[in-house]
Length: 260
Image (cartoon, rainbow, N blue to C red):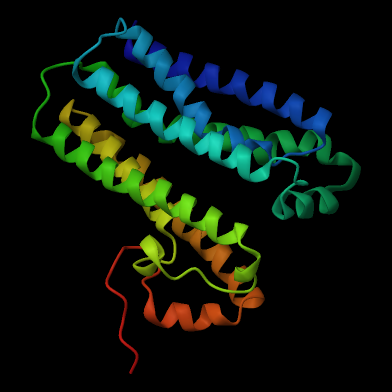
Protein backbone atom coordinates (compact mmCIF):
# COMPACT_ATOMS: atom_id res chain seq x y z
CA UNK A 1 0.00 0.00 0.00
CA UNK A 2 1.35 3.44 -0.96
CA UNK A 3 2.31 5.98 1.71
CA UNK A 4 -0.49 8.44 0.96
CA UNK A 5 -3.05 5.65 0.89
CA UNK A 6 -1.83 4.29 4.23
CA UNK A 7 -1.96 7.71 5.87
CA UNK A 8 -5.44 8.32 4.43
CA UNK A 9 -6.68 4.93 5.60
CA UNK A 10 -5.29 5.66 9.05
CA UNK A 11 -7.21 8.93 9.09
CA UNK A 12 -10.44 7.22 8.01
CA UNK A 13 -10.07 4.61 10.74
CA UNK A 14 -9.64 7.37 13.32
CA UNK A 15 -12.66 9.23 11.89
CA UNK A 16 -14.85 6.13 12.16
CA UNK A 17 -13.58 5.56 15.70
CA UNK A 18 -14.49 9.14 16.70
CA UNK A 19 -17.95 8.92 15.13
CA UNK A 20 -18.67 5.77 17.12
CA UNK A 21 -17.42 7.38 20.34
CA UNK A 22 -19.54 10.46 19.65
CA UNK A 23 -22.67 8.33 19.22
CA UNK A 24 -21.94 6.52 22.48
CA UNK A 25 -21.38 9.87 24.21
CA UNK A 26 -24.85 10.99 23.11
CA UNK A 27 -26.41 7.88 24.64
CA UNK A 28 -24.49 8.35 27.88
CA UNK A 29 -24.76 12.15 27.84
CA UNK A 30 -21.08 12.26 28.67
CA UNK A 31 -18.60 13.78 26.23
CA UNK A 32 -15.66 13.17 28.56
CA UNK A 33 -15.55 9.49 27.55
CA UNK A 34 -13.10 10.70 24.90
CA UNK A 35 -10.46 10.88 27.66
CA UNK A 36 -10.84 7.16 28.32
CA UNK A 37 -10.49 6.19 24.67
CA UNK A 38 -7.69 8.61 23.70
CA UNK A 39 -4.85 6.13 24.29
CA UNK A 40 -6.78 3.24 22.75
CA UNK A 41 -7.19 5.21 19.52
CA UNK A 42 -3.42 5.25 18.99
CA UNK A 43 -3.29 1.52 19.64
CA UNK A 44 -5.90 0.90 16.96
CA UNK A 45 -4.21 3.01 14.29
CA UNK A 46 -0.80 1.54 15.18
CA UNK A 47 -2.14 -1.98 14.70
CA UNK A 48 -3.47 -0.94 11.30
CA UNK A 49 0.00 0.27 10.28
CA UNK A 50 1.47 -2.88 11.81
CA UNK A 51 -0.85 -5.02 9.67
CA UNK A 52 0.51 -3.30 6.55
CA UNK A 53 3.99 -4.45 7.60
CA UNK A 54 2.78 -8.04 7.69
CA UNK A 55 2.74 -8.38 11.51
CA UNK A 56 6.52 -9.01 11.87
CA UNK A 57 7.61 -10.50 15.20
CA UNK A 58 10.89 -8.59 15.28
CA UNK A 59 12.37 -5.32 14.11
CA UNK A 60 11.29 -1.71 14.38
CA UNK A 61 7.66 -2.27 13.40
CA UNK A 62 7.22 -4.86 16.14
CA UNK A 63 9.01 -2.66 18.66
CA UNK A 64 6.97 0.49 18.21
CA UNK A 65 3.69 -1.41 18.02
CA UNK A 66 4.53 -3.11 21.31
CA UNK A 67 5.44 0.17 23.01
CA UNK A 68 2.33 1.99 21.75
CA UNK A 69 0.08 -0.91 22.79
CA UNK A 70 1.53 -0.97 26.32
CA UNK A 71 1.25 2.82 26.65
CA UNK A 72 -2.23 3.17 25.14
CA UNK A 73 -3.88 0.26 26.96
CA UNK A 74 -2.42 1.27 30.33
CA UNK A 75 -3.59 4.85 29.88
CA UNK A 76 -7.11 3.92 28.78
CA UNK A 77 -7.57 1.31 31.53
CA UNK A 78 -6.30 3.72 34.17
CA UNK A 79 -8.61 6.58 33.10
CA UNK A 80 -11.56 4.15 32.85
CA UNK A 81 -10.89 3.01 36.42
CA UNK A 82 -10.40 6.58 37.63
CA UNK A 83 -13.58 7.93 36.01
CA UNK A 84 -15.85 4.91 36.57
CA UNK A 85 -19.15 5.98 38.12
CA UNK A 86 -18.25 9.66 38.06
CA UNK A 87 -20.20 12.37 36.19
CA UNK A 88 -18.99 14.15 33.08
CA UNK A 89 -15.72 16.02 33.59
CA UNK A 90 -16.19 19.69 34.58
CA UNK A 91 -14.50 20.95 31.40
CA UNK A 92 -17.05 19.24 29.18
CA UNK A 93 -19.93 20.18 31.50
CA UNK A 94 -18.96 23.83 31.08
CA UNK A 95 -19.07 23.51 27.28
CA UNK A 96 -22.37 21.63 27.49
CA UNK A 97 -23.95 24.35 29.60
CA UNK A 98 -22.67 27.10 27.31
CA UNK A 99 -23.96 25.37 24.15
CA UNK A 100 -27.32 24.32 25.59
CA UNK A 101 -29.48 22.14 23.37
CA UNK A 102 -27.05 22.43 20.44
CA UNK A 103 -24.28 20.60 22.31
CA UNK A 104 -25.30 17.24 20.85
CA UNK A 105 -23.97 18.20 17.42
CA UNK A 106 -21.41 20.82 18.47
CA UNK A 107 -19.71 18.20 20.64
CA UNK A 108 -18.82 16.21 17.53
CA UNK A 109 -16.78 19.08 16.08
CA UNK A 110 -15.46 20.64 19.31
CA UNK A 111 -14.48 17.39 21.02
CA UNK A 112 -14.44 14.29 18.82
CA UNK A 113 -13.48 15.58 15.38
CA UNK A 114 -10.88 17.94 16.82
CA UNK A 115 -9.26 15.22 18.92
CA UNK A 116 -9.49 12.85 15.98
CA UNK A 117 -7.50 15.26 13.83
CA UNK A 118 -4.94 15.69 16.60
CA UNK A 119 -4.68 11.91 16.95
CA UNK A 120 -4.09 11.56 13.21
CA UNK A 121 -1.31 14.16 13.15
CA UNK A 122 0.32 13.04 16.38
CA UNK A 123 0.33 9.37 15.26
CA UNK A 124 2.61 10.09 12.29
CA UNK A 125 5.79 8.77 14.00
CA UNK A 126 3.99 5.44 14.35
CA UNK A 127 3.32 5.41 10.62
CA UNK A 128 6.91 6.38 9.80
CA UNK A 129 8.39 3.71 12.09
CA UNK A 130 6.19 0.99 10.57
CA UNK A 131 7.16 2.09 7.09
CA UNK A 132 10.74 0.84 7.30
CA UNK A 133 11.11 -2.33 9.33
CA UNK A 134 14.84 -2.38 8.71
CA UNK A 135 17.68 -3.37 11.03
CA UNK A 136 17.46 -1.29 14.18
CA UNK A 137 20.21 1.16 15.15
CA UNK A 138 21.27 3.28 18.12
CA UNK A 139 18.39 5.72 17.63
CA UNK A 140 15.91 2.90 18.21
CA UNK A 141 17.71 2.05 21.45
CA UNK A 142 17.82 5.67 22.66
CA UNK A 143 14.15 6.11 21.74
CA UNK A 144 13.22 2.98 23.68
CA UNK A 145 15.22 4.18 26.69
CA UNK A 146 13.50 7.58 26.70
CA UNK A 147 10.14 5.84 26.27
CA UNK A 148 10.96 3.64 29.28
CA UNK A 149 11.81 6.64 31.45
CA UNK A 150 8.58 8.33 30.40
CA UNK A 151 6.52 5.20 31.03
CA UNK A 152 8.06 4.88 34.50
CA UNK A 153 7.21 8.46 35.46
CA UNK A 154 3.69 8.29 34.04
CA UNK A 155 2.66 4.90 35.41
CA UNK A 156 4.34 5.26 38.82
CA UNK A 157 3.02 8.81 39.12
CA UNK A 158 -0.55 7.68 38.43
CA UNK A 159 -0.23 4.80 40.92
CA UNK A 160 1.19 6.99 43.68
CA UNK A 161 -1.49 9.63 43.12
CA UNK A 162 -4.28 7.03 43.22
CA UNK A 163 -3.00 5.64 46.53
CA UNK A 164 -2.60 9.15 47.94
CA UNK A 165 -6.17 10.12 47.07
CA UNK A 166 -7.55 6.86 48.44
CA UNK A 167 -6.42 7.80 51.95
CA UNK A 168 -8.97 10.17 53.61
CA UNK A 169 -6.19 11.53 55.83
CA UNK A 170 -4.64 13.18 52.75
CA UNK A 171 -7.68 15.32 51.95
CA UNK A 172 -6.51 18.86 51.24
CA UNK A 173 -2.86 17.82 51.29
CA UNK A 174 -0.33 17.84 48.44
CA UNK A 175 1.50 14.74 47.22
CA UNK A 176 5.18 15.69 47.39
CA UNK A 177 7.05 12.39 47.62
CA UNK A 178 7.98 9.59 45.22
CA UNK A 179 8.27 10.82 41.64
CA UNK A 180 6.15 13.81 42.68
CA UNK A 181 9.14 15.04 44.65
CA UNK A 182 11.00 15.80 41.42
CA UNK A 183 8.24 17.14 39.17
CA UNK A 184 4.78 18.51 39.89
CA UNK A 185 3.44 16.62 36.88
CA UNK A 186 5.25 13.29 36.44
CA UNK A 187 2.37 11.86 34.42
CA UNK A 188 2.46 14.70 31.88
CA UNK A 189 6.25 14.65 31.68
CA UNK A 190 6.14 10.88 31.20
CA UNK A 191 3.57 11.15 28.44
CA UNK A 192 5.64 13.73 26.57
CA UNK A 193 8.85 11.71 27.01
CA UNK A 194 7.22 8.65 25.50
CA UNK A 195 6.24 10.59 22.39
CA UNK A 196 9.79 11.85 22.01
CA UNK A 197 10.81 8.20 22.24
CA UNK A 198 8.42 7.29 19.44
CA UNK A 199 9.85 10.11 17.34
CA UNK A 200 13.43 8.87 17.77
CA UNK A 201 12.37 5.40 16.65
CA UNK A 202 10.66 6.97 13.64
CA UNK A 203 13.79 9.06 13.02
CA UNK A 204 15.78 5.83 12.83
CA UNK A 205 13.51 4.88 9.92
CA UNK A 206 13.99 8.24 8.19
CA UNK A 207 10.90 9.87 9.70
CA UNK A 208 12.61 13.17 10.57
CA UNK A 209 9.57 15.02 9.24
CA UNK A 210 7.39 13.73 12.11
CA UNK A 211 9.12 16.08 14.57
CA UNK A 212 5.88 18.08 14.78
CA UNK A 213 4.25 15.16 16.63
CA UNK A 214 6.16 15.28 19.94
CA UNK A 215 6.27 19.09 19.70
CA UNK A 216 2.47 19.25 19.49
CA UNK A 217 2.01 16.70 22.26
CA UNK A 218 4.43 18.49 24.57
CA UNK A 219 2.78 21.84 23.87
CA UNK A 220 -0.69 20.43 24.59
CA UNK A 221 0.49 18.90 27.86
CA UNK A 222 2.26 22.08 28.96
CA UNK A 223 -0.02 24.85 27.73
CA UNK A 224 -3.50 23.56 26.85
CA UNK A 225 -4.99 20.52 28.55
CA UNK A 226 -2.32 19.62 31.08
CA UNK A 227 -0.03 21.60 33.32
CA UNK A 228 -1.42 25.12 32.80
CA UNK A 229 -5.07 24.15 33.30
CA UNK A 230 -4.43 21.98 36.35
CA UNK A 231 -2.08 24.43 38.05
CA UNK A 232 -4.76 27.13 38.19
CA UNK A 233 -7.28 24.73 39.75
CA UNK A 234 -4.85 23.33 42.32
CA UNK A 235 -3.64 26.73 43.48
CA UNK A 236 -7.25 27.75 44.10
CA UNK A 237 -8.28 24.57 45.93
CA UNK A 238 -5.09 23.68 47.85
CA UNK A 239 -3.23 26.49 49.67
CA UNK A 240 -0.30 24.13 50.34
CA UNK A 241 0.24 23.81 46.60
CA UNK A 242 1.82 27.26 46.46
CA UNK A 243 4.60 26.07 48.77
CA UNK A 244 4.94 22.93 46.67
CA UNK A 245 5.48 25.11 43.59
CA UNK A 246 8.38 26.92 45.26
CA UNK A 247 10.42 23.74 45.75
CA UNK A 248 9.37 21.44 42.91
CA UNK A 249 10.02 21.60 39.16
CA UNK A 250 6.88 22.14 37.08
CA UNK A 251 7.64 19.60 34.34
CA UNK A 252 11.16 18.23 33.89
CA UNK A 253 12.29 16.10 36.86
CA UNK A 254 14.86 18.00 38.96
CA UNK A 255 16.11 17.76 42.55
CA UNK A 256 13.87 19.73 44.95
CA UNK A 257 14.90 23.32 45.50
CA UNK A 258 16.13 24.17 48.96
CA UNK A 259 14.20 26.66 51.03
CA UNK A 260 15.89 30.05 51.22
